[in-house]
Image (cartoon, rainbow, N blue to C red; front, side, top):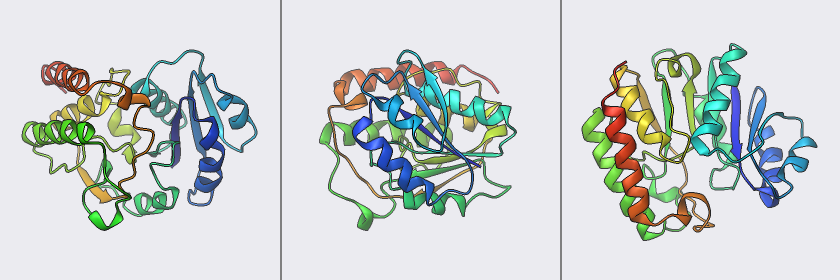
Length: 227
């Protein structure tokens, strides 16, 4: 099992996140530095972690695909992914590790399964776009998804090789869920805290209609794919 953390310009936080994650993972930590320019690279070098660096920013989806390839090349069975911005609590790594078993391919975090875990509310435009796409994916895939976009997940690495994932950006989860359903992958959700901050970074910097259009475009393409 490997814990994979995609990182882009998280210098103020990444060191503390890695220190905390180290306490909760039995296995290596892989950091995929997706072209950071704020000193993140130097901070990571001082930590006891594996690293892969993209010299330029290629996108969230590209960073995850790099992590999956890294795990596959080392014959690692499971890859847990989490973010480096404190919107995922490292203590919950153990909750994912405890759910890994032969009959499951994806264990996906849901920020909406247990409202008592929430730390505040998401911005309204993020909430409604995520709900629209999550509802759409429930219909298209048959999966009982309550949170399509949580980046806190565990993946059976070998199962991912069947999906031919391609999207380099923030819409990768849309492609993932549709292709996973095409291939009959088994999924389940686990409750994690809902934590939002830095709304204007990353995906939050894009207008709601732009995000919605990108998600729909990726969904349309994924629907034409066959396993």
